[in-house]
Amino acid sequence: MNWRLSAALAAGKIAHWLSRRQGHKGSSLPGLVAQKLYPGTLRDLAAQVRRQIIIVSGTNGKTTTSNMIFGILRDAGYKTIANLDGANLAAGVTACFVNKARIDGKMDCDYAVLEVDEATIPAVFAELNAGIVVITNFFQDQLDRYGDLEQVVGIISNALQKKGKGITLVLNADDPLVAQLGSKTCVPAVYYGLAGSGGADRSGVQAKEARYCPFCRAVLNYEYLYYGQLGQYGCKTCGFSRPAARVEAKEPLVTGNMTSCRLIFDGREAPLTMQLQGLYNIYNAIAA
Image (cartoon, rainbow, N blue to C red; front, side, top):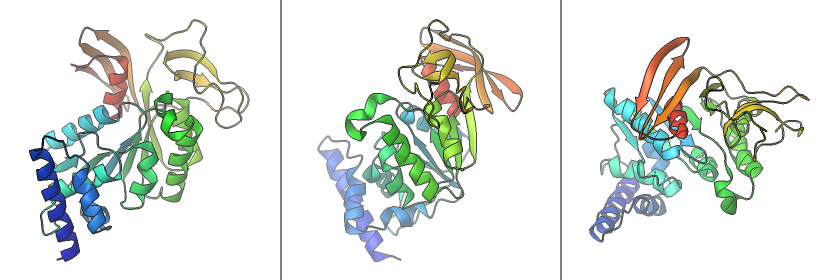
């Protein structure tokens, strides 16, 4: 038994209990306390995940996608942990493990589904070995924290280049900022996206973000857009274009609080209906 780990876990669990008693969520506090007492907490606990660690990152859709993946694995009978409350910095990721570990430091876990903030990926990579990394999209929502979109992409790209061995990327093919990671990092990638132009904008198509090719800086040409910079794109100068998607959704339909589409996976089709509103939730579902 690692007594330092056990002491850190005990302190983290007590901190969580006290925080909840005072009416706070305490979602990150257990991890913060445990890591302070024993910096190897996340490393030691994550190493006990039997099957795979799945990381979900990107600007929007992280929490919904993580919850969907967690539900799929749980319903399939796997013992799965996840930071479902969205505490996605290093302390929150650590807390996810601390809350589920026994005091003796043992974990009973097949899968870990971890929502991770984009800028936190290098720190998390340093402590654990992920098997799958899902990237949803990149938008300007976080510019006040990270500077610009290229900086955000660079953080993730550099982390993948340093520790990409054994990882499979799951990337949004419709977002050129995300899709470029498959070529820039040389990490194996599986792509997902929408099929066809149903519901897309074809009039005066010009993306507000990702206007330029990430490889040669020429203007990207869009045949159509779904929203933001997500759509069918290509660069006439260097040839960079939307990659073929292995998982696609066609005939998207949003009616009231229901969203439906036809899911295409390896040539097979199946209907998909969700009690979630918005085209963006189709992206979350096919990512999961």
